[in-house]
Length: 495
Length: 95
Image 1 (cartoon, chains in turn orange, purple):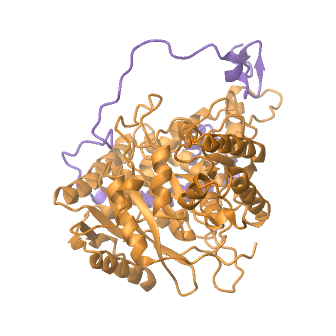
Image 2: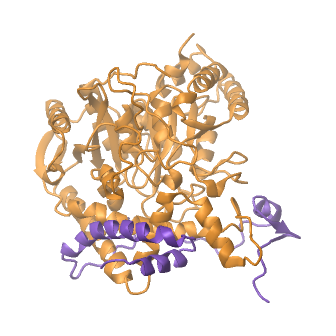
């Protein structure tokens, strides 16, 4: 059977259990697709030996009738996850050559559930970016193009390689991480589905830290059903992450009924920004109508502090990053500068970090250093944390008033061209996350679902935001939206 | 609050990132753009609002105060750029 790599997780799972295909066949189909897709620069470390070994083990489990949820399903892993014995460098030169002696909790759980790892996926350096242009591996490329125009487009960021690989059928699904929109924005740019779960749902242990109070891992998939399957396999309490929640993980897939009758969906007026393209506004209105037709009650809501989410984020995230990235000192792992005669330890630190960190990472570390420095801590960092509390309260109030989920655009535009933002000031790039960043600040679950295409044929996505710990209900609303939108477009193959 | 090249140099020093002198004006400029954006936060009335310490109301979990891990010196040193005799090695720190 051909095109096995094009299957969804659910389809492949069912075929594996029906003995229509083997995991080795699925895995080989993906490995061939990866080898033929060098132009996308999505997979940056391939692990075919590990993949085939895991696939053979999965086939043995399937034959023995002992098949866990992800048994035999080939996936890609974002380079931010530490994977034992496999390069894990967060797309940074400073972690060149680093091979962890341990496995992240999320990848351990995926392997325990029978998943097959095809390799590591491209991303923005330390997950800092919205276009995958800050990677030491070079840009990942979006498989989608504007009609017949061959301009290379961004797959979004920071999980750009993951989005590109899933959209181009190089893997059945991939892991991502999301600090300000890094799962949802790339999914919207590539016609894929991505959920950032509630803060604490997935363990952060073994994931290279960017901003610890905001980072969450999540699945990036072809369908909402696949997101439900994979999230369940990734989630759960971990004693090694003190912020991971000790709550039972529900069977998310079983909650996909598509029935959203009587659900209250909030439409926040503050997300209607000046300058939003008509196509995005129409997409949002259409999505609202779809949910209404499916029996949901639509209510206008207000989240008054929305405007301050991005500025608060650009204090809090760099502050936490400056602290987290202090560990890259050239002593314990990764790159160390070549010392000149007379260089002491301070010169070693300064040169190592100047050589190892890219421009955007250096800038954010220094902004973080500044806002935490004596004399500015209160004015910037504490003020941002106060504003964050107000942003969370906006959501708390809306949920207390009975709203079940909130519908917004996922991004302010479709995928843009690689290099198009180079001359803009950094704040322009930050605006990509304007609709997603509030969700991280409030610790809520958010999902991006493709619901349409723009005039040039590029995919566009809508975001649904749910109540804390109610990913199951959120996935079900997303499922209803997915069914109503009927998005089936795929990128034409040029690579 | 405007950042000059002297402040930019101080921040780079605090962050332990070497920035050449001729790169400082551009860096100061970028800081000013970003801080200008952040200044919007001053419009918000935060009177009486506690700074957020945890986004979920849960308390951090505690565990028994017992050794759970250890005896892995080789693994810990495996990725070190310079390890000698079971230690991380760095340039001489004390004269």
